[in-house]
Structures are given as C-alpha cells and as structure tokens.
Amino acid sequence: MVMKRSGTCVESTVAKKIKTESKEQRDSPHIKVEVENGTTALETPPNIFMKVDPSDAMTGPKGWTQLYNGVVAMRSKFLGPVDSQGCERMPNTINPNIKTRNPRIYRFQLLISLMLSSQTKDEVNYEAMKKLHQGLLLTHPDGLCIESLLKLSENEIDAYINKVGFHNRKSQYIKKTCDILLSQHGGDVPKTIAELTALPGLGPKMGYLFLQNGWGINDGIGVDVHLHRLAQMWGWVSKRANTPEKARLELEEWLPREYWGQINPLLVGFGQVVCVPRAPNCDICTLGRNGLCKSANKKMLEEGPISEERKIKLMKQRADLTKLINEVI
Image (cartoon, rainbow, N blue to C red; front, top):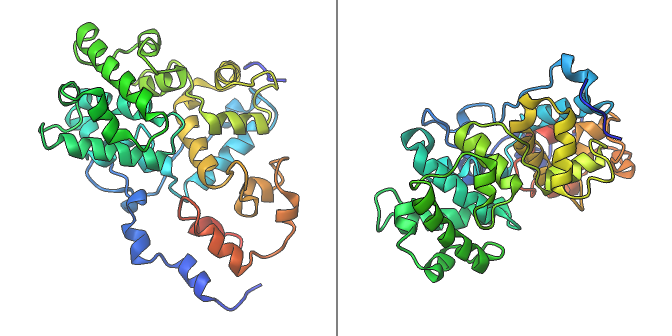
C-alpha cells in the first residue's frame, strides 16, 4: 500500500575495449549532448541527478530512498538515449542552444517531439525530428517552427515522420495543433495542463513534461511506461495503479515535489539501458547486487564473474556501460 507523505584476471581484448573508449565511441552521436554554454556532455559528467535528502526518508514506501539514490549513482555513469534524444533534450541536440536563443521555438520543438514520442523509441523519434528540422531549414531560417510547419500539408508532414509509431494519425494531430496554437494562443504553446491536454493527441504525461521543461512549471509527474513499470515493480504504487495516470496520482501523494521534474528522465534512462523490460541486466545493477531490489534475477547474480560473452552483449546495449561493467569485473 502506498504511504502518504508525512581476483584479478588477464586483460582480454574485450576488457581493454571496456576500459578504453574507442574513437568511434567518443564520436558516437548518441552520447553528445548539447548544453547551454555550447560544450557537450563529453566534457562534463554524463548526468547529475539530485539525490534524495535524508529528511525525505520518512515519506513514501519503505526503502524508496535507497532505491532512488542507487539509480542516481548508476545514472551518473552512463548516458541513455533519453539523455540526448529524449523529448526535453532533443531540441538542443538537433538545434544547439535553441532553448536560450529562442525559447518560443524551443517550446514548439519540444511540443512536436512529445507528440511524436508516443509508442516510439527515442532514437526513432530523434531521427524523425532531425529529418523534419533539416528539411524545413531549406525553406525557413529557423527550420522546425510553427511558421514553417503551417506551410506543410498533412501528407508532407507524414513523409517526414513516417518512421514513428502511428505517423498518419500524428501528422493529422500536428497539423491541427499548429492551427490551434496560431488561432488561440498567439503562435506559442500554452502553459496550463488543461490547455495542453486539449490539444489533439497530447495526454497528461506529455503535458506535465512540457510544463516542466517548456515553462518551468512543476505541476505534476510525467509517467511513461518505464516509470510506471519500475514504480510497480518496487512497490512505489499500489496494484490498483494499473495505468500511468493512476500511478501519477499515487506517486504525487508521497514523492517530494522537488523530485517530480527529474524522476522521469532518471528512471527512463535506467529502464532503457539497465532494467530493460524483458532482459534486465541485474548483474551490473547495484540495486540487485546490494540486495535492494526484490525483483532482481537471483540466478544472474549468482553466476559469478561476468564472462567475455556477457561483456560483449552488455556492450551492445543502448548506452556505453563501461563504468558499470568495470565495477564488477
């Protein structure tokens, strides 16, 4: 029930690969994240998420702070797809520093990326957004913006985004949304959850994520499939919370508001790379190794040293797991 708030071995070729990044890894676009001063995340720690303050340990389900802080520690050691290609980061990745150069265009690009994200992997969504932005740069100096998108027909929009899930429907939603933004909101994106969810194809998850990143308004938690799955697995929500929206309401009852904005990217990246749905990597997860996660694959944890074959498989995940692997070899 959810509580209310109140050895040594000879170094092999694979091991050398793990310990030393190759030029290809350093140059890989999925680990280059633009930040506001024009540098990239390669020059800074990958992720800095706020750890839970000890004073918050009295709220929420038992042991949640240890799980949360364990994920924070792991997420500081790798970049998941969400960190460069997730909706809130994507505009700055495809259009460097757009958030500070032109906040209105950033908000619009953020909105479109959120609308395209449903039932679509971040990497696929990223490619669609990049294709759309680069294509529109040929006709407008700002590339993807409401002015350039309004000139496209639904079929033309669909041609750009046809790799994302439900692209036909989304092209209709985008076209209608552009008309609504222009006629009812002065060409900008509104700043209330009621107005956002009134836009076609935009649900509460997208709305709350938009408010946090587009307007700096922290009115709710954006609960996606990864956050929902992990919250259920760890007992952070009740069995009754069988939808993301029900899970959001329960999480908001006890999770301190200062963590609402970061819990989505924090756990999405973890769910994309370490605790993946059907093949979790419990052997490199500190939660499982430290006995914090009751759902950890015990057989995997008891198998002993990670084999060369396993290392190769881990290096094919959706992120560079070098640092996590090095902790257990």
